[in-house]
Length: 346
Image (cartoon, rainbow, N blue to C red):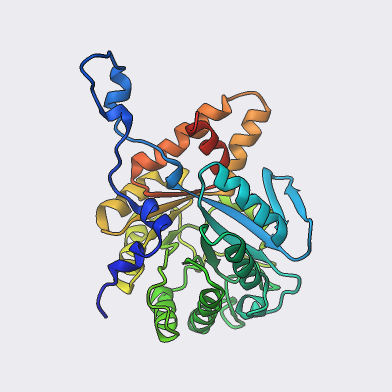
């Protein structure tokens, strides 16, 4: 199989997300005017084009329920997500990643593989209302299974059955593709998932649909608030048998290197803040664009610290986002996107 570099060039929003070199007015010296030396010498720059904003979809109408552990983050019905996209575009944000919360869960996550499921329906309606919005879907099963794990369970080993789940991930990816998604983002940390998903998409005629892999994803305590908004906490045990040990640096690099070999178009490190060394390691050892996920716990810590009056929220938020870029991130998935975009426009 040859490399399909053009996948990352098809959509203009993705082209902007992945642009490597940027010009700023602060790069120029005009002979007649004095300029700030600090601005001229700044090495790392943030742009609204760096951000992907997460949204959480559920069935119904007129639903916009704030999550207590994540101030400013909501579970929304599809009509409210469509309204939210209007607000995002006013801020210059043109990329979202969708998570689905189904009405019914079962042992295999059937809703995720159904063309009438919450994710497929959300993608269709958002793309119909906002064809210029770049829509990414999280590809996993933890929100859809009644046990909260990321695939079909092996009852003997009491963990996810890797290879059966690979087949289901490929089916799920094709459902999203048919609904009109712009990029697939598999997050389950199954071995071989990029190979399986790529084969499924190519076999269904979606060879130009890019894959952004959660290639180095740690079994982290920073995910706590996300499990509130996504209703995805495991009913037993934890995810350490498939997500990575936070202590392992070499393995973290190998995971992303392998996904690059399997055909991923974009790699990712998740979480971001406590793993900036890994972000730089992955950037230095791979050739693909790199995303980071500024996860729920990182977001909520800043919100709670601001509420307690112990930090300047805006300054700490922007410093944190800048750190991700400095470490090597090309794309930042963040719940701070709207607030950061507003500050960048000032």
